[in-house]
Length: 257
Image (cartoon, rainbow, N blue to C red):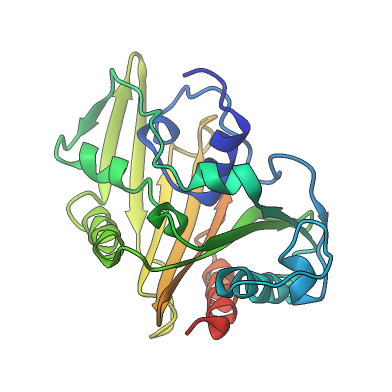
């Protein structure tokens, strides 16, 4: 696969997974511990965190919700953030079209299921906001995204996709040319009510160059849905990550209605 554009890097960080990301030998896939471009010190004020300039602005519900999530991330020690806005956010609202061919997936019925993981709330196309966050002290990169629910069927379909990945597609093998890559999923340990949908996936074996883990939590409240993701080379099975993701997600949704 050709090196990804900036938008492709953002999709990776958001954990909207495509087959191209899941497979070995996908050149240009970014490392989990680095934001795709410049990152700035994270503002302690939620309103400032919601705008690229940190200046005063009239925020919609999604932006204010993401800002509340980022404020929680700051309290958890994540001191750098990058607001995704403008054309970058508009590009993320488009369903990706970079799935490569020539890939064998076993069980075969799981190929479409994995490709369907490539979804996030902003793809509903309406009001939405997203900010990525990190700290040098924790080897993982996070993202918080909130959008207005404009297509409830799309949200329910994604919940069904995650359920399928956690059951009949819990262990998948992908083969491309001479490379074989295991892909497995499990449900992270959470308190009741922390998330409507949660998945932890692992790509590759320990020591493989394409080794990567991702943790994704999604929850709806009122007319809005939020998603918090972490991506890292390893270590996301530690319960601390699930707890942090749930705290950021539920802090974000305090603004939803």
